[in-house]
Length: 235
Image (cartoon, rainbow, N blue to C red; front, top):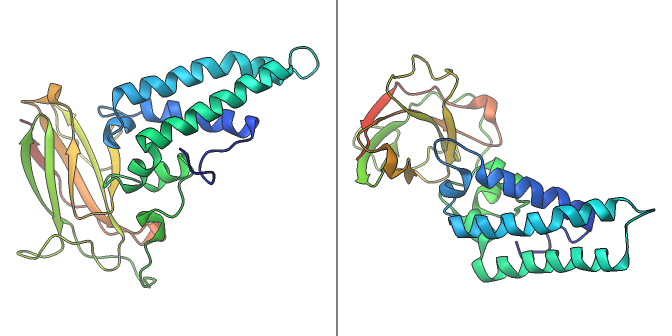
């Protein structure tokens, strides 16, 4: 969060940024966005602490006539500085930007520009993708799955030329979904053809159900067809 093009320094803009960031990290089921992006629990707790400090002060600051004082304004600027310094130490936004699981929504939420996903440049496709994703899924233990995506039998794992990522939908449940459009499916994007999906050790001995398709974040209307349903036992 230490990049000036990422974290707003203006108080009103920082208020929106910090609120959105803390809520977003805690959102997601069964895996939170923080876990998916490899942000540790103690790091989320620290950011939540900053927001807890910030909120009552910002209420005072918002009442310009009665309670906005120099002291309140200075305390808010100190919290902004603490947040920026914490990112300098932990490299939170850099880690999010380089995560193999990062999505366009992640980049927008944290105001990250210039990431590999954002910079990806490929020839503009002229027609919808027709190739299917052929995934190889293996268990790593601890609730983690290793996934390799190919577009041909026996081919190497690689993102399809017309795409810039693979999109997947999944859920952990006792009953398999009947369609990729069922409610309750989680959605993720990987810019790498080989990636790890963390489903949580608490889900060991349960089944994960997954669908995949080739996807281009710049041309979502040209996305490929969804694969058939894949199921795998979580170890």
